[in-house]
Image (cartoon, rainbow, N blue to C red):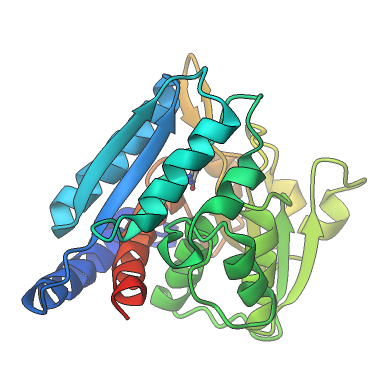
Length: 283
Ligand code: GUN
């Protein structure tokens, strides 16, 4: 395997965390103490693991983190009341509600209730709307992490063909908006797209996150493509991406592995958001 082709998300995430540590120290000098509250509803093991990883990152960069653990049977109204009290709490600079939420709770209603200034995930419609008009502030962390990787690897997207596979509010749609803001020509595909290959074969930059193990094979991409794999598919043999890394790497000029590519960047960008929120709240 040609390791010079691998986008090292872990290394870039460490660099971002070092920047955040400095920013946090500077804020503390001014008497501002960034604090993230993670709201976790229920006991889903994957969500518990993600929240633990976020708390560990906070610890590494000097951000205060606290848990708000709620029963899976909490009503939507009770959860909204929790959010409103966190909005009003001046010691809390950022709020993150771990997704997915139980089916009886509308996730968008909950996102809408978070103070946009405390919106660590960038999921509030105010922040999403700003992204669409090229006023990027707090924006979803995974696509922002990919933009940072593009910058770190000096890949100019202007005029390039970018193909995004997936149209969720968390990755696909904000990713497409960020690439469009940087003057890429963007195609957005998804699991209902007919003849996916007819799009992916033209991609200079390919971002995929649909949760289908090894959906992208080497015959679906052109030589020199830059690939960002957001897929996380667990099975008995381990964790796999949406890209068949072992064969697509032969065609790619750069590619993210799974794990160790985009994942660590999501959390590092989240840390930058907590700093951003602390500044916005202190204004
Ligand atoms: N669940 C899976 N990814 C995410 C994320 O980026 N933020 C939140 N809040 N929940 C998630």
